[in-house]
Image: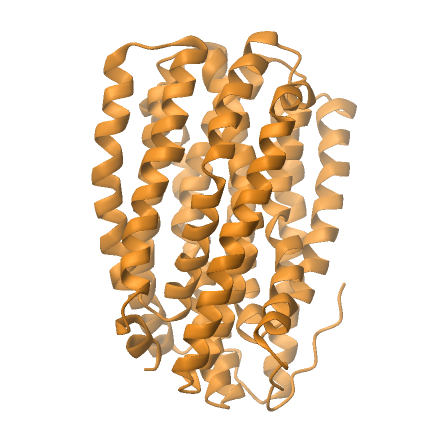
Length: 451
């Protein structure tokens, strides 16, 4: 278990923007890719069981990560709240905010896990699951529910440490969790012959191990600074208010992804399996690009808390340029790897061919994604949750007609998946870029972040 990080009463300022960003972004990169690495590992292990198993996990993952995605505000609201308190020089207040985030995660996780156990079959029926695919999807979703509580605790704990300008500890926890996840999944899926159930159980155990580390770290730091471990319900309500806007923002994102899954499900199990792989790779790259967004959340929150608006603006310009550049780099690498990517996850030739086309489209949209994720992090760090929520609804209104056009076109096979990913990467993501870019050009978000 990593040692609980010692917290100074004040945090020294790094020499310049680049060093400051890299200090947080580099370790954050490793920690962020842990969850998509879980998915990539699960997909690789399950993919060699068969197309039905892979498609079932794809459907279940879409539902599961909708629930997880809606509660990511636990990290996104905790990080700026803690960072702003640090900017004000109020460490006990920062730790109290983190403690409240952990309590909120425990309550929400328990409620959602119970609901998921009861509603697994109806939800998957709504997603269009049928036959063997449905059976595997139900098994994976139900056995993933224990890990849902742990994931929410991980969100809150990670948010606390990011707000304290510590991204190294989450990296250590994520690396250990990923290693444990791989070992457990191989043993349970192939050694115990538990099929997709083994994958879900192995991942849940690894997630709980990570969650317990964060709980211990938060508890120890609170004890060092005489911060009560009992929740402050006023603090929880304040976090919930910000979280409700962030939840609406995330809900719009998840509806977009779920609607995409509904359209691809109608194209058949081959396209559904290929889409699951493409979306897993997109998620992996998104989390990689999100390393800058996490640095933005922590740094922007701290600088605006300290009333350093000019520094916040300078950090935003630097990180935006880096986001675009990193997007170009990942796009080039993905385009080059696309023809061979399918062989890593499946032996089915049709799935591999469809996946290649989807990945080429995804590669073309990576610079846009890099820009989007950085500005998203900047506005979250500034506490501009209401605008993000409204913009999310606008973006969804742009995307749904594009999806409807793909569905009504009747395109299937590789062409169907190509048009679907064109709508997502070159339609939905540019809409997000425009709404975020227009906001970032104003000073309103900096005024909000200073309070």
